[in-house]
Length: 112
Length: 115
Image (cartoon, rainbow over all chains, first blue to last red; front, side, top):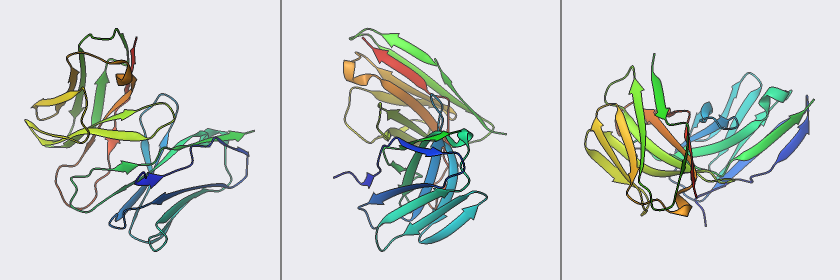
């Protein structure tokens, strides 16, 4: 069993719809949870970061962490064609030299 | 500001040939450095990380090796490439240290095809 599970998609939505992405994980010791966005043939870039459980909002993006269920989510409101990318969840332990455990990534396609 | 460079951008190599990929970081000192491989349809797999010059930790057994000859230089190597070494190789850096969380910044990547 992989430590971090993420549906690879693709997930196709019309422009303006809400995109809902999620990951599950098995290691209850993870404390830091991130979402990275990766455009085709580019390196990933950090989109959202959350420590422990709770919600975090940044513009059109909302990240949620439910540690009791070992489940994290990312919501994108009012999706735009420029949101078309692969979204990777990642998580890390404390005192781990910054090492990240990534999910497989979900490809999102927002159609005009 | 900090910048991370990787080269080459693309590489096609025959099976059994050697490999050397280079990564350099500008604008920061004593960063943590990481090499990842991303296979098609799969997430990023951490291959090596380094917390200082000459300090390399391997995350998975493989045909590859890494070296850090200078503070902001990280090199990924192989003596003999295998077909399974094909993939997208990403270098990343974060602020140095062990504790807490620091954002990782990724380079543009090298797409390696082994034929």
